[in-house]
Length: 232
Image (cartoon, rainbow, N blue to C red; front, side):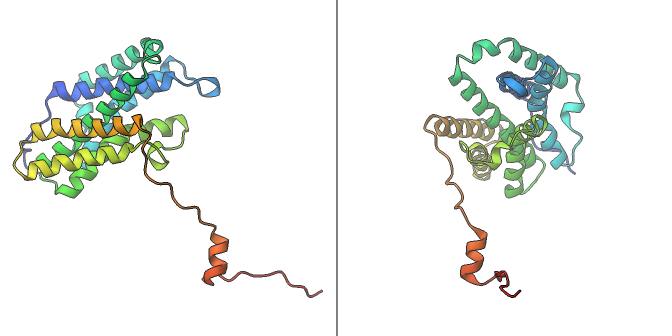
């Protein structure tokens, strides 16, 4: 693969990792009862959120994960997770801050994923796909580790949709000549705004229609319904 046209600055990548680590730790610290975690568990969740998006992004691009080529990624994710644990009591009273932080983290991972894909010459649609996977990948890994239902698979506040909108904006902007760094910044803003508005106004996609498969089969005749025999 040829040399990329754009490289994500280390400070920007570490900023995303750090914010993700704090957000993950805050999420994990909020569990009570049987699902409560010890310090190690909270730290692992924070690290997973902080580094998961970058790992998935680079794996999809066929690259050695950047998070494994520099000591600072793991150090930053660990430190951010510990900071998130220490500040959990404060942030639980500032729900709006958590929502904004979550939106920014989604936007950053999505923007970095899409930008890096574009820089490596990936076509627009796959570039958006990689960006969305990077944006939501950390939360998917988090839910799997904690034994929770995967958030993006259920009715919610446009989590993946917000990421998709931001990533699409980056691709379209770049196609019209906007430099990748500027398009990435604008994409983060688009994602964050959509996510914050969705949470604030409780907007989500329509739920699937409830389908009773046996009733549908009987009405359409596609699947024969076998009635019990009355013969003795």
